[in-house]
Length: 268
Image (tube, rainbow, N blue to C red):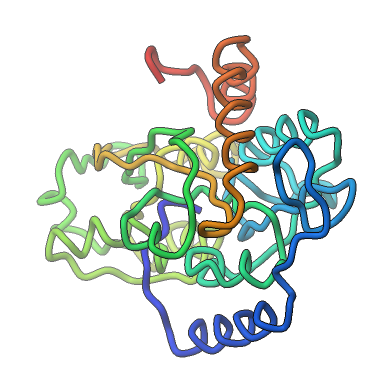
């Protein structure tokens, strides 16, 4: 979800320590190797994510679906295994604790590639270019960050959307997750919310949000990457990079993009 930004709380730090301890006891030792990729369970690609973060990953009819999920299904197919998605606190994903503990093989969580995160996890090549968007009542315009200063702004905690807003010297009401953020707008707690553009686009497809529109879009230069265990799973990283490259070539990436997000921009 996202372009989520590093903010290691005391609770997250404790969780990381617990998971790290599990790793020290052997929890992170891979059990099988398939095509050079280390997997923690035979016949399975285990994916850590953080729910909900539509359209990248969310629950529908009792199943986790979304853009990231479909791309990881292509990786699982390449490896001849099936994918299992594990809902995991985002702090333990970006700190590498979940991967180190052997909770999963790969993290797929709408995660922005950042140098501070790359100290703890190995990112794949970028698979998605992201921008931020302002969502507000139809007719309201927030063409620039300065325009946001005239309204009560909502952001999702630990995201680069929140980082963008705070970087513009704007205080915001911080919500725990994307669902709470959207509800904050719909209940009038805030006038406008800033979230990743694809997430906003997904919300606007819902007739329940027909009173709202994109009030502004901000190019922050963000790119999403999947992640594997630091210095321990180059084989899986290589497989993921190869699968995404092939998907771009054979058109399956475009099909998945348009299924979950909409028309794919040229050069994406």
